[in-house]
Image (cartoon, rainbow, N blue to C red; front, side, top):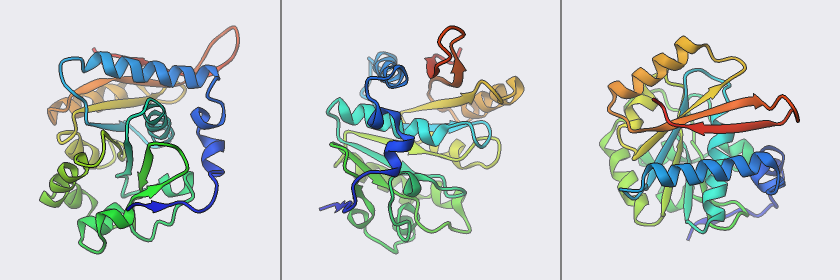
Length: 234
């Protein structure tokens, strides 16, 4: 049995547009992302997705959370995993205790079932990061991590990983090789083109399967909406 969240979902509703306003244009964009992911993997069942960015503060964690929500709304049993052992945020978004989590399981300080939480959204479960370890990259690249991914696939239809930025540390590059697909989040208002290109090349060097690029903070000239655009990484 997974841990059930006792408090109603509040902070998540402020950050997760797909929960707070499922009929908004932004929520529709996330559903479009979901559809495009399906089309991009028509020849193979997608069981694990990693979201990362070139630099911090590009919106990857919020994007990962919203994508997890729309897949859960589709009826798939989803586990959102905070694999950012440098600056974890999922426990804030979903009001969870971060005393134990992914790092605890990888260091054999906790059992898997004890760090997976129901968060008040049907079909969606969350595994927080847990205590920040001194050796995140080593834990991400360990045999324990590979075994955990295979174990979790037995209980969930889809695993979604929120990973650290690519150009800062090696964690996302390592984990991308273990996932079925990777989405690169780019902030159109701040990300430099060279950084985005370098991030893509970093993923390619890891033999990651790049599903596409999620353009964040894009504004429609007429209606001034903030929304997301998903496209292939050519």
